[in-house]
Image 1 (tube, one colour):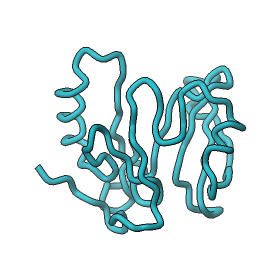
Image 2 (image 1 turned 60 degrees about the horizontal axis):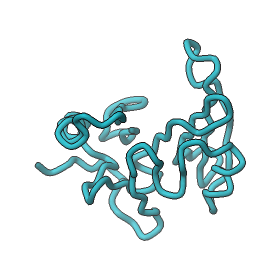
Image 3 (image 1 turned 180 degrees about the horizontal axis):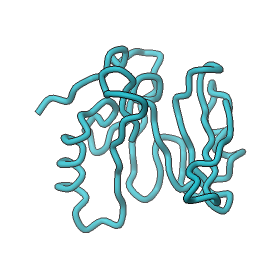
Image 4 (image 1 turned 45 degrees about the vertical axis):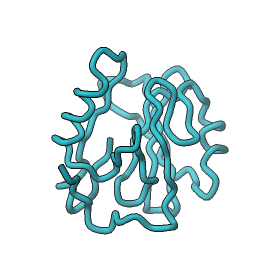
Length: 142
């Protein structure tokens, strides 16, 4: 089944290729890293802003990293000062794969089927979501 690619998310030489390693990390980011370590692991990106990730989880700090002031590409989430979640913007962020399967820009239902079939029994999860519209208009974030 072919995955839909959001407008503007075509593979470009300027986009990094990252591999997701369940329970370890994604690309150069490893779960458990501190904010400064994450920033150092993202050359060419700058910290855009820090924010409270969710009012229901005040202990979780979100940090946007991007290539421009208004162009976030990577969202890192920290609890107790340690990285525990990473979300990638499907349009501006790195191209992400898991065991050779392209994840960036996937149709959320396709990604859910893939993750349920391949990660059954694993103690991890992937949450395909859409921020601010449809995958075609803004790119999915997982």
